[in-house]
Length: 310
Image (tube, rainbow, N blue to C red; front, side, top):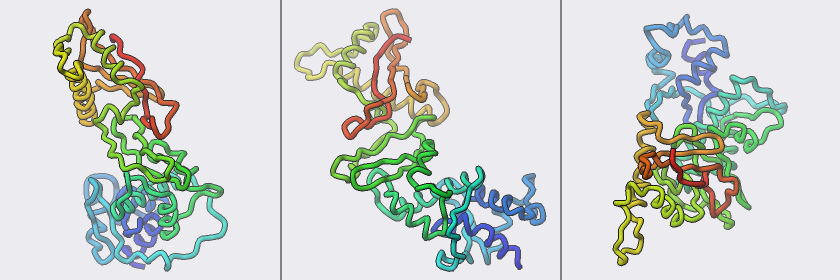
């Protein structure tokens, strides 16, 4: 059997519906199959990489750069209908195989998102399940796709309503912060609300934002320039509001670039430096707790608690 044909056969179970697989997943499958990588020049040291070698086998493979990652496309991979039938008994999975399956499911979701316009990037679980079946993938024995994905909340978010269930990829708007869920009203349709990682109101629920602004203004007497005394102005804290929301957005941007630790996110609380200071010259910090009453009206991950000096 030719090298290319043998490698393509090993990679079959990891291919997405476009017959593609990431280089990392390909390496893992080849290692699991105990394929002699050193024999084809892949040693992990300087020299040819797996994608270099497979790129030369252009009768069997094509190397693609997409989504800031390198993928291997198998040109000769059989269609799902040509794959060997699965056993009636679902297999048990070890840790490595489970990790690979989660990656495959993630690839399936990304592929479906490229092909369809789903509100808030929420993909129906029924679509994901059908695509997995088409590709010949199976879940561990006794698992349903919803329960299986819930075991990886750092990668997948499950959203339910009265008629359907959805999954959305968690892409880490802020380091270690769970992504905010889509709004799913009782009508059963996912509300088309564009959630922004830079929007403080998508980050946290405020029971009374006007009251919160007033409390911040009282603390930040050292910065009273932002209070507009003109009675003709409807919101005398408009400048405070602008500064607070802009400060949050800039901290998020810096956090994503690895340049700031102004935002701190934990499992059940979060905080950020507002940029305001107290009369004593101390930074004023915004504190949030986990939103335990999440519903259609208050779906954000966190809930505002208070402003206080650091």
